[in-house]
Image 1 (cartoon, rainbow, N blue to C red):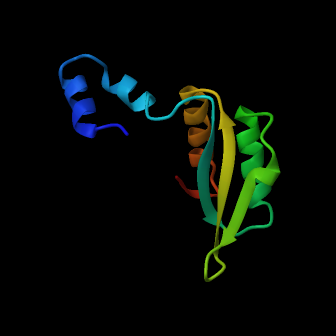
Image 2: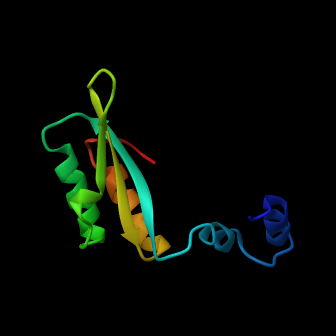
Length: 106
């Protein structure tokens, strides 16, 4: 387990940059869970799969878990995406966040 105080000290002492410290929190390649929320619609899930496939062509729609809100107005998708790098993950987050049907990406 990483001791946050030691990591902070390394950053303050200039041993690693803050960017390097942030990148080291996730080891790539890995399966990464991305939660996407939006208003319930006929094609929301398919559109989100297409957005992800733009950056990870091998992404399989079977890796998506869907849940409707208690009132049925919203839907959340939990997508298990195999990512190979931080830039790839950042691009997926950015593309999903910019989509007009998306309310939140976590």
